[in-house]
Amino acid sequence: MQPFKKCFFWALCVLLSTGPICAANDRLVIEENQGKALLIYNIAKFTEWPAATASSDTPFNFTLWNDNALADAFQIIEGQETQGRKVKINRQNKDSIAVDCQVIVIPKQQLQRFIKARDELDKLPILTVTTEPNVFEAGAMVLVEVVDDHLAFSVNLAAVKASGLEISGNLLRHAEEVKF
Amino acid sequence: MLKLAQRYKSFRSISFYRHPIDIVKTIKNYLLAYLFLAMGLSAFGQTPPVDLANMSLGDLLNAKIIRSYADHAAFKTGGQGAPLGYLDSSRFHFSTSYVKVRFDGYMDGTDDLSLGEVLLSGGTQTDKNFPIVPTVITQEATQFKTAYTLSEQITLSLSIPYIRQSSEHISNKDGFEEFTIVSEGLGDIETAISWFKQLDNNNHLLLSLGISLPTGSIDETGDTPGPGRDNQLPYTMQLGSGTYDIKPSINYFGVAGDWTYGADLNMTLRTGKNDRDYRLGNVYQAGIWTRYALTDWIQPSFRIDGVVWDKISGKDTDLPYNPVTDRYPAAVVKPDNFGGTKLLALVGLRLKDPRGRLENTFLEFEAGAPFYQDLNGPQPSEDWRFSASFVLSF
Image 1: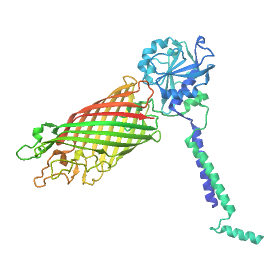
Image 2: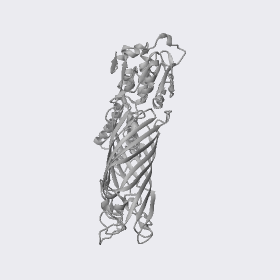
Image 3: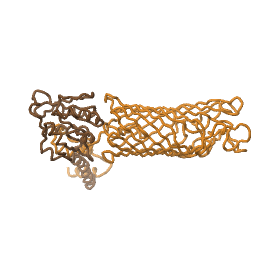
Image 4: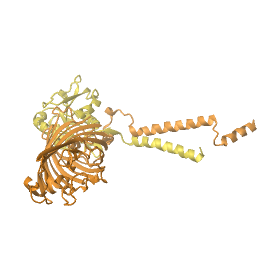
């Protein structure tokens, strides 16, 4: 191989090999449902429940309403620890309300079910998180959504406080919108 | 030694001679380059391993999100005018659909004609009457469709139709006062590539380019009044176009709460002429639709479709025609009596699994009728249409 050709060949190899690595390292790529599950898990980490509801030997329950795709994505956090308790994922496809949980995730197309359950949920120390703006408008505490190509969340602080929960200011400063 | 070394050097400078040491070096270089490239290029297909469950909030909010469409608005539009397969996070999509269209009665322009006006019964034949008149035409198509999602934006699809058509007639020909002809078989197979673009959270665009292959027969024969018992059937009874047809389409759809809505533009552009020296008219279809999610699993819909299609160009010379009088025995064998404009209203109902387990699967029914027709007539007019489809994605 001629010296010039040799230099060009190796320069091309270096360029082709390092370029994608740099590009890939630039921003982590996450699938939408997995990203939402992780964000909801993170939000739960920044939330405080009334002391009476916490017992370290019981699981920390996330209940998902009628969304198997999202529930599958939540498997990534099953068994992890938050608030000193092991995370457990529950799927709830019936119309009843799971009172024995810390977080209820309300997906799209569940507005009517949420409106029916809202009065009862308001009395419980349960963080209600939704991926549907209409459900957030109807009173859910946290909205998790994808804006452009990144995750974002909004918080209805008044609803959070009414349920006896506390959300850290460190979390709120990342929120797109905080309703007082 | 020096001489030997010089001779060895001179040997190496000759291009056709490769010393084993050089060959080993070259192989080593290429192996190194290959490993280097493989390591780098593999980064295109994966992100570095990260403990996702313990990601910081900042990293998570900064991550690039790849959409999954299983619970997204786009999913709700599947089967509604838009090609299959772009709508959810599934890779494979199968659908089977059954469509039945019934033509009953005649129109010339926007005027309804009675069978008595279209059937020649004594007197002289004009442009507007014929000795043979199809009374009720029924077209049924069972379509098997499969799609494969190549990437987040690109989907390939293949449709295989099986067609059955029947036509009841009355005529003033002895022995054929009333008769029915039937044709059935494979239709024109279609393949398409679709490009999906998410405009924003609620608005989506799908561009498709398909090609229809001339796999449907244009040589269907049957027992009709004529010189023999096995005559070429009219254009309406053939199973394919006989031409390669280009099928571009644009579909827009959006969502607002429990409402999903959209607009479609689909075209069938014929190319050349078929083996029988004719070309069916181009078809241009535009539609608007909306669907409401009454519950998670019951979703009624409403659609308005407009269709414009052209006359047949050329002529099948095996079909009966009297060149002396320039008259045809039936409207359905006269190329000029094709084409027109019609507007249809259709209502539909999509049913999903109430348990929510089969999220990407649904059953859909749709029925409707034209409320405006302007036909190059006399031409059989559409009475009603019905479709049922089952979509399965995994």
